[in-house]
Length: 571
Image 1: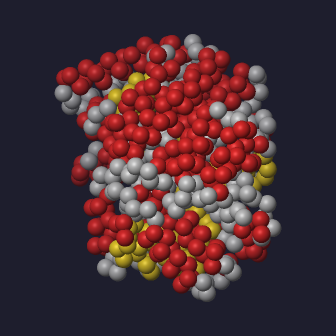
Image 2 (image 1 turned 180 degrees about the vertical axis):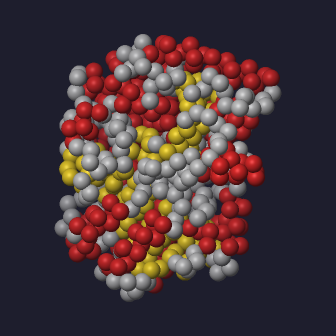
Image 3 (image 1 turned 90 degrees about the horizontal axis):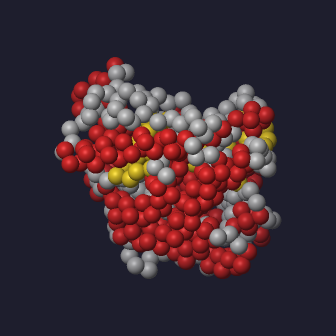
């Protein structure tokens, strides 16, 4: 297919940007490792300089009230992960410059099923202090040995002169770091120069993004465009574009790849796409949170209810990895108390505007599908008692809105866990992220069976006593769907991003966190000093903590730590 229809003036702007990149590819090819590291350092400095206007622009389009603690989300999901990723990628380039593997200095262990697991968090003393009690591992597929992992890390940076053409990144409209992180991955992991087409929701960030990416724009490796679906369609079908990467929904992916309406559905069924070039993607889905039964205190019930409320309500519920279905043990004696705390946490979370297009319509659809759905303050919806045999659209449609559903499954601990994993794998659409919550004594009682269950879950990121969003924030972790999807059954996407160690062919990331925050964790014998995480929607000093964490990521130093700890502990 040739270019999609586009007004001549807009077509000239797009053609000029693509032609600039065709010429810029040659300039990128002669940028050796030292130059590429220098560019990352310049992007890091530009991000630090733009952090304040970045957050202001994000708050403007999300209509966050001035002085709201929710502003902390924009610090921690905007400039903060870009600063961390730029620094981590620069460290990878430096390792390759020195003739070392990017994995040198990272420990590895054997994981279930003959896998190698690379410990990527904590790495260094600052991680151990700021994220005490949290860990993250990247698991490689069964049969890949540690020597191969170390020898292959680096991806296209091992051959920087062998560039791979022009890529298009269709930027996300929800989390503002996504477009920049995707551009960096295309350049450094895949050696492609990039045209970034912003989601119209984020057009107000164009100036900030161009400042952040200025070092790469100046060298001819990046261009930034705005526009609607017509510009996106023209770009992806442009004859000089070699690859497309997108973030969004499976429906949007299919519209781009196969077209819309009955004709698009027929092409998808026949396996005859309109778009004849490689496409990678990070898409959403229906993410589960599996709650394992245990002897929880009232404080445990309250904290974990706030944890799940955060998994659903962070960024207003407009996250590809927002928890949508809570899978509870039907026979748990504390189930009723937990549900009461969960409802209260959903109700008490700070109000915010429904800024993302179509949110109110998707909430209305959920309520229409479930007559007993409960509307809670702030436009939130709680759907109780999904029928495991006939659960309805809550397990097949990503609401991308503040809607949370609950499904109960019977059985003792072992049978419940097996059934919950099967349900998550077989009934829920998508494979981006899954969460599990378990008391330390429950973890001990399950022993190796819990690791086996984590291995059985077919999700790109799995988190135990943490939210999978921690995996997103960890630059050295991978982010994307579980591997194996195809264009005609894309689920949560194809390929990964972030992955600052540039590991070849990773399978998943596994995150673990503390069941209780400090100081209760210390009182129960767990040597973790992490208070309530600042990304919790109920955190009382999230804005200050997020700003201070971003400032620290811009210039790590011991002198900044006391202020960060003081702010976080007041949360």
